[in-house]
Length: 323
Ligand SMILES: *[C@@H]1O[C@H](CO)[C@@H](O)[C@H](O)[C@H]1NC(C)=O
Ligand SMILES: *[C@@H]1O[C@H](CO)[C@@H](O)[C@H](O)[C@H]1NC(C)=O
Ligand SMILES: *[C@@H]1O[C@H](CO)[C@@H](O)[C@H](O)[C@H]1NC(C)=O
Image (tube, rainbow, N blue to C red; front, side):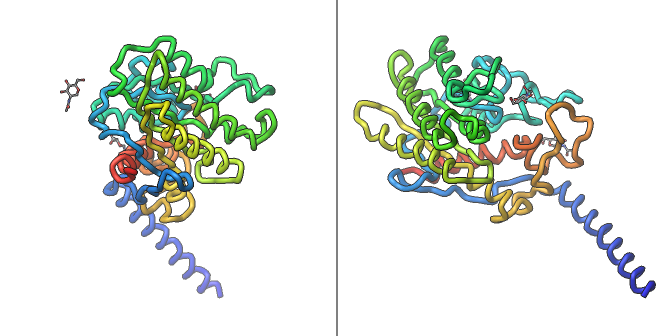
C-alpha cells in the first residue's frame, strides 16, 4: 500500500516537472494570437460585428477616442500620450491601466494616424444616472465629448475616425443606476445622442467606430438589451437621410468568450493564463512569471498582449464584415 502510494507520488511529481518544462518552452516560443474570427452580422439583425461604410484604416489621419480604462492613455484631453513603458513598481505603463500600448494606439499605428485620446479611467456614460455615487475627478463620457467639442482641434472630418468604447463601467454599476439595470438602454440612447451631436455643427463628425464589451465574458438580459438598443439605434440613425455618417460596430464578446468561456479556450490564443498578472492596480511588486502570455494585466483590464489582439480583431471586422 505504502509502496503504491509512493509510486503515485513519484509519477505525479515527474508529471509536474514535465508539465512545467512544456509550459516554459511554450512561453518562449508562442506569441499571443487571435484564435477566433469576427462574428459578422447584418444591419437589421441582432448585434454583431459590422462595417457599415468605414474606409480602410489607412485612409484616416486622426483617431479621436472616447472611453474608459480600456482606451485611456491617462491624459483625458487629447494630448500626446506618454510612452507606454513601465517603471516598476508603478503598474501603469505611462498612465495606462496595462503594461504596454492600448488597443487604440495599436490601431492608430496600423492606420499611421495621430491619436487624440479623451478616454478616462473609471468613466461611465452619464453621472446623472447614478445619484448615489460621487464620481469626483472622473469625467463621464458625456463630459469627454463636451470637452472635445469645446476644444475641437482642427482636423479634416473625412479623415477623422471617432472611437466610442463605453458600457463596461455602467454594466458593472448597473444596480446603482437610477431606476435600475433596465435603464442601461437610456445610456445607449445617450451615446446615440452624443453621436448625433458630434455629427452636427460645429464638428460634423462622419466616421464612428462603436465598440462593446459590456459584460467582459458574462451576459444578462439587461446587458443584452443595452447592446441591442445601441446597435438598432445606430442602424436607424444611419438610415436617416438627415444624418450623413458611417459606422462600424465591434463586439468583443466573441474574443472574451473565446478566451474565458472555453470556445476555443485561452490556450488556443497562446495564453498560459486566463487570469490577471497583478493582484491589483496599486503595485507590481508581486508580478506573474509570464506577463506576455497573460490575458489580464490587473483583474478585469487587458494585458498589452490582449490589447494587441483586440486591435487585430477590429482590423478583421473592418475588412471582413463590410455590409
Ligand atoms: C505616416 O504619416 C506621416 C504624416 O503624418 C507621413 O509623413 C508618413 O509618410 C506616413 N507613413 C506611411 C508609412 O504612410
Ligand atoms: C482607475 O479607476 C479605478 C476606478 O475608478 C480606480 O479604482 C483606480 O485607482 C484608477 N487607477 C488609476 C491609475 O487612476
Ligand atoms: C514581453 O514582450 C515585450 C515586447 O515584445 C518584450 O520586450 C519583453 O522582453 C517580453 N518580456 C518577457 C518577460 O518575455
